[in-house]
Image (cartoon, rainbow, N blue to C red; front, side, top):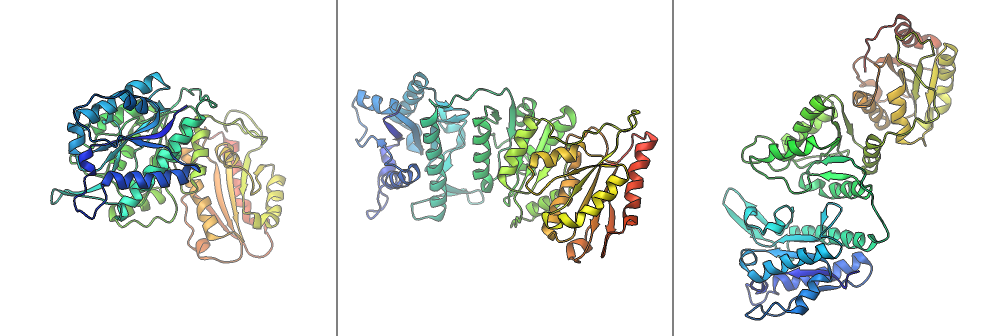
Length: 491
């Protein structure tokens, strides 16, 4: 489909070495990209740039041909680039010809990549590049009003270059598969919040996954880091059915007109829209975050303890793949699995209440007499094996009347994960309150069991063989609720 993978557009002035011992910045960039992109693609990359000194000769047919035959176009932004009629014409021609040959975007991703070599104010960037986030190869110090460009030996150059090379590689692969894969629009829109710098890789993975399923992802261009940001975010959220927020160890940029970061602004506004319009909200953060910024540590602590988690929001602290799974389940609710069905209490129905019994595989045998006791007391059970999917686990939490979690040989980490699941139940699609929840702790004694706390939860200590009387309070609470037609209850 394309004869070259990459066309590099640059101002030749930016390739002149500052010191005689230096290699030109663009020469070094080109050489490194040739090697790294070839390694990522598993074949020799085809990269083209105009080696001539741009002068008073016509925009040649050869150059136009090379532009139209490139899969991806890179603009290396600098003060000279934005003043160069030649460079701007290359950019304009790529856009014009791309529209004739397959379009300038794949999903919501542009085939143009913006590499900012030298600091240039965003509003001075060419119109075609205004909406692109770009890859900055410099660092700006607001206190001194100076910036420092990265050369190829700088650590931050290496990280930014690697991110760029990987993103280009992904785009090339997607372009190569585009003829074989027809992605039908799903008609659903997701607000994927612009993250802090440490979450960019996870952001790209989630965005790619959503677009491959035909979903529209917003924002579809970079947010303004100024007084217009709230207006922009509000507009995007109004169009969305779900918002997703990736929280890492970096606090993020704080706009001049704001007191909190861009990450915080988006999360705050999504919570407001959730209250007003029913927008679903998922917040994800990896476990074990250790931020240097005290503001971010406070946020992580509040979210982990659910003191700053909006009602209706779900917090995940697990694998990124689990986040993708939950997003798709929210967008496409699964058909109920083969499990007992329950009905809302108080409507005259006398079907048995259903208890979801949760335990680790190491406690399967120990929990059997508990399940037998519950069944003998006219209660039905959800009881899933350790290999059950996250989809079924969430379904059980949404549909059950009560939850009993058994922890014997399971680790404290497993216990904390399940505690978090119960804390998140208000965010699941429950149509009725939970009648009772209990944690049954048997030997061995651990710090996690001794320190366990959860509001409204019955904690049952167990030693030796299972004493049926220990569950009497739990069972009575379920039956009292079932029998009196009470619509009140806890989540």
